[in-house]
Image 1: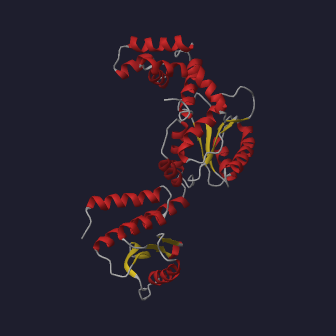
Image 2: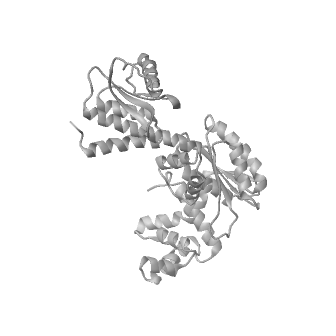
Image 3: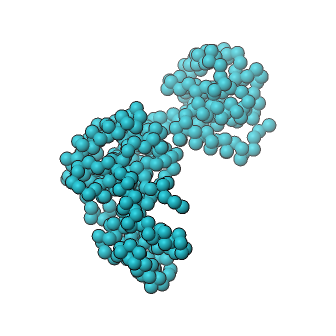
Length: 375
């Protein structure tokens, strides 16, 4: 009996998710084996793809590969004993490989439907592998700009977007930011990519051109955190002749790389001396948060007010309280009252550029420290 379309769609999405987040075709084979009730093998000889589900006998794999290789060469080959069904992996008229279901009895249409989904997932993985060989600089630029701007993306999205740019972030990375005091920022970007193959690196501007551009880089971990920290520190020292550098400690969880990028940038912004390289220090982040945002957060929690959201909106509007009132559809005096309460609680005047900068850093500190803060 054929499966319900919704069931097939759910399975199809699960297989694609396994490919896109880097779990690979073995995970796809395991999903198919569970659905089909028997071992499944994906074989694409030319690309050295051999993905058996976990229940495939080891001694059968080599024989199955020889069979699929002969089929791909256009030769007639006897079907090995124990193969219950076969679905081709093909693009156009070219046979690339096959999906095999093992078992003692011929498979029904239900199993064949699932094996066809495996074939689609295999073609997706092949396409992604080809894409990884042709890095997409646009993907690198948009991902790094988003992370530098405070976006919090899921592990899956970060890994997927990095893969499009030719970078494997499944094992984490070291985040590095350099404020560029040079006329040719692209040369510094090239330096990072040459020094650390597979790294993501781009120069990012503030949009208004009021601040120097910053190089933002994610350096995939090399043999664990400590080794990568040392290598990243050496690279940071070489970059320091182009401007101050901030480095965050090695981050093994891709989902936390946005916070790591922001921490590296804050290391530069909160530096109190003239050191060329500053390692992100969470104690310093907590201290700045304590004197900027924390009193406002406590007040909001205690009285159910909206000082922090209002302040963030005003900062995003460049200090224009009237524009925020108009956008939110509230009286201007309500926004002014909240800003006066901000000044009363912390001494910060959101109309002054120097105070805006300090408060913006406080907002960023709060994002980086989110997992450590109450509530």
